[in-house]
Length: 577
Image (cartoon, rainbow, N blue to C red):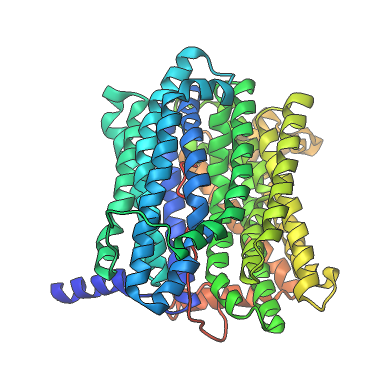
């Protein structure tokens, strides 16, 4: 019996996923686990450190992330897998040589820039985060140098991820971020008494090592080998050429993220923590539904590129599913921002001011969550059409809008840190709408308005659900009545209502949790009810998913008639956010 269980476990870990459905299932389930564990990680950090201290830790990631994402991640996110997969078809030896050479070149390039950045880190952070004083910068630099070492693991680890996903092994790469988060959590808990703010940084180093080690055995089993040489072969040069547009795009994105740190440091020391924590919450629906479905759909779209009718059907069905699934979660984040922030980050040292500021950041991000999720799919649709230029141009123009809005909101209007989140949502909306418009002209015979109708229906359902959740939340939250926090407390008739008999005292965690769950479930039912009245096809897909999952015990998140063979795409970068 034990041997049978071990055998099945090995098969599950090492067997390839052969369809879009199985691939998307694994990606989606692991995204859920990773995001939840990521929130646990943030909760642990909020328990041990004040927001002002955490801002130093989060700020320290800026320089290592900038170098890694531009010089390394840009290659693996768009160029490595297509070239490696094509080489596999010709012969395994060529493919493994490509992987080995790319590993060495990436380590050499990243190591050289990391060494220079580490030497001049204090001067660079004086430019990136002028709001922090000299003593604070010294702490940031200490942390950043540890993070540079951790990123070295990721350089190799992302090659392994690309290799495994090219061979349709999704589970192990999807598990790797869990071990990364565990490393940070355990490092913080075990070392905080002695190492203080360096403890989570050491946890990052350990987590990055685990991210690499968990993938290494399977990669070696399949054929990966380290090669003690560097060669610029034809395929290696092709990877560099294909990666160039993505590298340019990521360079602009990193400029935008650096501007966010720059401005947040000028607002207050703690502001960057509010911004980072708020971003952590809103990434859940974006990663769960946007990234997962987009990754699973890309190989199918790539094969249907010559058949515009099938391509159009796959693309817009996937888009409508993303919008249908993301909108209700984004609505919950907007309406229940304060309860959610209190539940996730509400430690003794994370005070009410921090809760309110983080809550507004969450709402500002959530307003653009559906656009962020849609961008994951729409950009990949252009890649499937062998057009990398258009999404890069649109993305860069969107980033420029975000940066301009950042300065206008913070320096011009003097808004708090949530202005940065609002600027990001505005830029994401611009990108999504423009990409959608360009794609509809390229592959669709239907008008733009007709294609947008299902999205509009989901929007109407979300507004209805949000309105109901808002009123229910205000009615059953005791603090609303006691402190007269909404217009309900100003209605004369409420003075004779014995609200003490039916409201919940949300000063207690159990009551807050009950109220949050109850309001969320009510919003979900209202959302589905309105969607049914509007005759949305996505409702049928959703109920089919539930039936397959809980009745037939077959998890298939993207029900389609035909199972497609897959050639996977690179996972998104592992980030502290």
